[in-house]
Structure formats: C-alpha cells, structure tokens
Amino acid sequence: MAGVMEGVNRRTQLVGHNRLELLLFRLGGKQRFGINVFKIQEVMQCPPLTHLPRSHNVVRGVAHMRGKTIPVMDLGYAIGLPPLTESSSCFVIITEYNRSVQGFLVSGVDRIVNANWEAILPPPAGAGASSYLTAVTHLDDELVEIIDVEKVLAEVTHASEEVSEEIRAHSGAPETMAQQHVLVVDDSSVARNQIVRTLQQIGVKTTVARDGREGLNLLKAWAEESGPMVSERLTMVITDVEMPEMDGYTLTAEIKKDERLKNLFVLMHTSLSGVFNTAMVEKVGADQFVPKFKPDELAKAVLERVRSRSAMQAKAAA
Image 1 (spheres, one colour):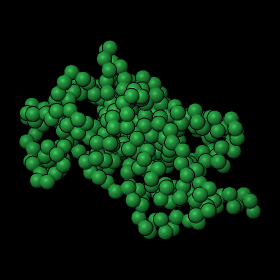
Image 2: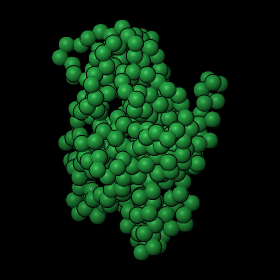
Image 3: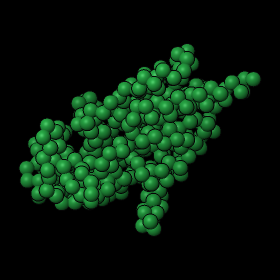
C-alpha cells in the first residue's frame, strides 16, 4: 500500500502542471508511438497465446496471467499496419481502458518520457476522420504518434451506445430537457460521438470541443458575453482527461479559478480509472467522475445534475 500511495503522490504532482508520462513503443517499423503511463498495468514479453475461434481478426489470442484471461490485440494491425509475425519475440502492454483490461501486442518498447500536454498536438488536419491518431508530438527530432485506442476498442468490441428505455422514460419533461446545454470536451472523435449520441437520447443539446484549450477558449468567450451567468447558460461540462495542448485536469483547474466560471459543474468522463485518477480528480476540484463508457451511467449522471439544478433554480425563484 505504501508503494501505491507513493505512486499516487508522485503522479498527482503532475496535476495542474499540464504534464504526462508516455511509454514509447514500436509496431514493426521505425515509427515510434506513445501511450499514457496511467493506462498501463504492466509490460512483458509476450506469453503463449491461446487462439479464440470466431474472434475479431485483430485479437491474436488470450493470455492467462495471474489468474486472469486477457485478450491480446495486434495494435499495428488494428490501425492498418502489417500484422506482427513472431509474437514470442514481441511485447505485450497490459492496459486498462473503459473498465476493461486488455493487452496490445507491440514489436518493441523504448522508454518512458515526461512530456508537457502543450507539446502534444492534434493530428494534422489532413489525417481525416478515418485516422487512428488522436495526437502527435516531437521527440528527439522525430514525430511520435499517439493512437486513438478508444477508436480501436470501439471497432473490436462493438459496445452498445443505447440508453436503456428505463432511463429514457424517466428523463424528465421534454421542454425541460430541451433547455439543457452541455459542453463536451474530448479529443477522440469516437468518444465525442458516443457522448453526444447518449445526450441526444435524453433530449440534451450539446456543443463539442476537441481539446481542453479549445474548450476553455469557448467558455471564456461565453463568459465575455454573459459574465458569471454562463453557469446559468450551461448545465455542465463533460471533459476527458487525456487531450492535446491542455488536459482535462488543467482545464478543470482553470475553470475553478476563474470567478466567472467557478460555479460550472464539471464531470470528468475518462477511460483512465483506479486510485490514481480518483486522487487527481479530487485534487483539481471536479464535481463528479464517471469512467467511460456506459451510456446509462453517463445519462444518469447528467439527469441527476439536471434535477439538482432545477431544484436549486426553483428554490431561488421562490
């Protein structure tokens, strides 16, 4: 436990400083890729894999480790590169995304580097909607690509994006829901679309931003128009954590220290999970944390905020 808490304390020092740690790896060529260390449980030489009949062609098999059965995906093949051949000479990065544990097969691992989110940039505009890049950065005069793992997982797992009938039936009066407005901040196009579709099913209007910097600029522009009343205009902000230029922790901290924005309700919706993320969410003053991605859980969180906000407004008007 002491070791865990030491890790929490060390990594929470990055909060508010817009920094992250990246593990660099390769997928069969010279190109280097990066993944946030917070997502990683372990890196190991690839163990023997058991093939699963009728599994997705990206899934190379399952590994049996420490009493668990973990699917192992060929990450390069998933994003359109040639499949890796000799898995026994490869490495597996064990990760936790969206409350599931999976391994990604890579040809080699490089090292961990400390980076500033301001140096993590959106992919080139010409990359297009079909690109698997969520961000890029420069290191040692080379371009490091950060993969949109949420897009990969969405294509492999085909997770449901439907809000249950029970939740929709109790979402509130249509006229009340139509007055709700949520700012969605996420660098993954897949994640943005998942959130927007979820909120559409309960009748909530959305505006989207692709990273924390864009989201903060939009909020400040609204504050210039309406001052502190921006919290009346906006039901809540739903933000991811990992984003180029400005991460969700820094965005939240910036919101909470701005007198015009500090009353905004901020919900962090992230594939990061566990004790590290809980500690960091509390440190920056976010109002709520919901791990990705369960449509019903996200819809419930938004509806609870709508009801609480409506009750406060009714009390103030009385």
